[in-house]
Structure formats: structure tokens, C-alpha cells
Length: 413
Image (cartoon, rainbow, N blue to C red; front, side):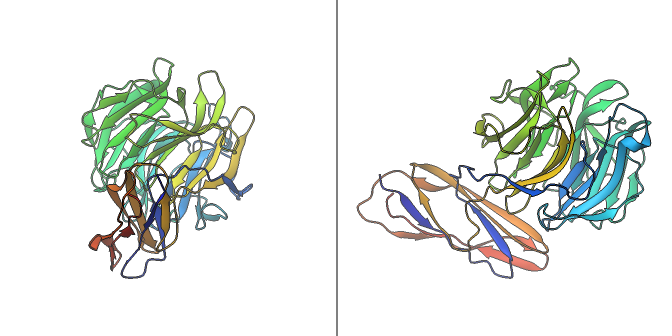
């Protein structure tokens, strides 16, 4: 079979400043790049990091010493921002109102607000909820006692409709596996499941898929087990199904995971049961049912309890963490997109059915369009023709409506 050359055209109306294509056959072979060896913020682990709709990264709090020792010098609550994918950083606030802590959770809302929850400080556990509307510059208390118990190491996600879901964690010398949600930016909370089926744990990963499923995996549970099971909820945490009892990657906690624009999950690093640390990269394209190792050793030093974000253009940025010998404040980045060109031509070399994804963005935000089973590569053809798919609206960025169509030519189908 000869390769299939496909031409894609972006016909966006308005003023997108960038776009990223995912053709469904990316091999993620791009090497990681160290963006900053010493970004200005102190070496730390257990910090919270979020990516804003405009692609800026905000980093908050964390442990800067031994978190088991009482003392204010062991924690921080500073807030930092990067507008260039981790290359440089700006201090936003040294005293935001919420107390010094680590292993808290932060999520970015669709409208650009940041919600910060829980964590552990020098004198105990937290369950307060805070909000920033200006990328970490100022903060307001949303709820001092939301109903769920004080804890750290929980995981949380924001659903497509803006609902926040928080899961598991550790607090008051016991593990948790309860699931709570808020539909008003953390002001009020409702328990949706007190015993979801997966074991009590902390330091797990949770992500939300483009169609609104929650995927939870890994962590350290109440039986002192390092975990590599995978669970899925299709109803905002109310019910759960085990997708994989023992995933291909070694059991671990303190890993970091993101959802990239093509709809696949990327999991990185963590601490394993032998006491060692990892810097491997794994990918799942089927909501955690199966996993493929992308990289056994990514190039950045092994670590756990670091933070990572997926930029709207598909780039992944990781920050901080710890290993056996040190705390870290290095920043690394890798790209996952197939092309950043406006009208790329992509060569398919292997028969198959491919999903195509397009991300368009500007200073107001971004939108992602996924077309499952969009390209079919089956074999030779005697005559080739061009197929044009009608234009269609995908979303609104600010006041700008973006309209995209795909135009492609089959040469050897």
C-alpha cells in the first residue's frame, strides 16, 4: 500500500491566533525540553497547578520541606504565573489569604476562575474552598466548611458544564473514597457517593474526558497498597465501573496525568512500591481500558508529587516534585500535536481508521473539535477523488464564532 496523503484546511472565521491538529497516528516521539532550571519559585512538591483558558499556567502552594514536621517553614502559599509555557514566571501573590499548605487541589473553571480546595498545613488538614478571578492575584473564601471532611491528596475535576467533582484523599489519620460535587464554583456541595467501589486512597489521578466521563486510577490505598486499577464514572461520580484491575504500568502514587486534545490520557512518573521513582510515560486512547508505553525514560529526572498541565495547543508542561534526594523546581515541556500549520498535509502510512482533532485558540480561550473515525485508510484505489465536508460551527470564543471545515483528498484509499 502507498501512503495516504490527506490535506486539511482550517477555514476559521474570526481571529484565532493559533491552532493544533491531531491526526490520530501521532507517535509522541518529540523529546522533552527543559524550559527552566530555576524559575524563581522555591523547590517544592505537592503543589497545585492549573492551566487557564488562555494557556497561562498558575502554580500554588506546596511543601518546601518535610511535610511531617510541624513548622511554618515547611510549607508555602505563594502563587506564580507563567504566560509562556513555563519558560518564565511571575510572582502573583505571597499572601493570598488561604493558609500555607501542600497537597491541595486546584481546578480552572471554564470562565477562567481558579478554585482551590483542601490540603495539609503545619497544624492540620483543610477543607476550605477559595476562588480567584484574576489568575491568582487575589483570592476570596467561598466556603470555610463545605461538608466534606478536611483532607489532602484528593483528586478533582471540572466537568464540561462547570460542575466540580472531588474524590478520595487522606484526613485525620484515615483514608477517604467519598465523592462530592458542586455546581456553583464550590459554594455548596452534595455527596454523590459515600462508597463508590474503589478502595479508599490518596495521591491518585483523576481526569475528565471530552464527553464527560471521569477516569480515576492509581494512588496509595488504606491497605498500604500501591494501586494501578482504573475506574470510570459516566454520571459525575454517582456510580463507578472498574475498567482495568491491573493496568500495564506498575502500581504507583504521586503520578501526574492529563487529558490532551485528541481525547487520550497521558500518565507520567510517580513513586512505586519498591520505594523508587519513575519517569515513564503511558497513554490510553480508550478511557483507561488499555495502555501503551510511550517512553520508558522521558529525559527529566524521576520524581513523584509533581504537577503537570496540558496547554490548549497540546503541549504538556510538568513542574517540581521530589525524589529520594531532593525537592525540585525544574520545568519541562513536550509537544503532542501533529501540526501547528493552518492547512497541513499529513501522510498516513498504516491502514486504519483515524480520529482527527483540531484545537483553535486566541487570547479569549480555546475550543476543541474531535471527529471520531474521520479518516479510513484501507488500501489501493484506481481512481482518486476529493471529498469536502461542509463547514460547521464548533463554539464561541469570547464574541468570536469560529467556523471550521475539513477538506481532504484521498490518493490511495
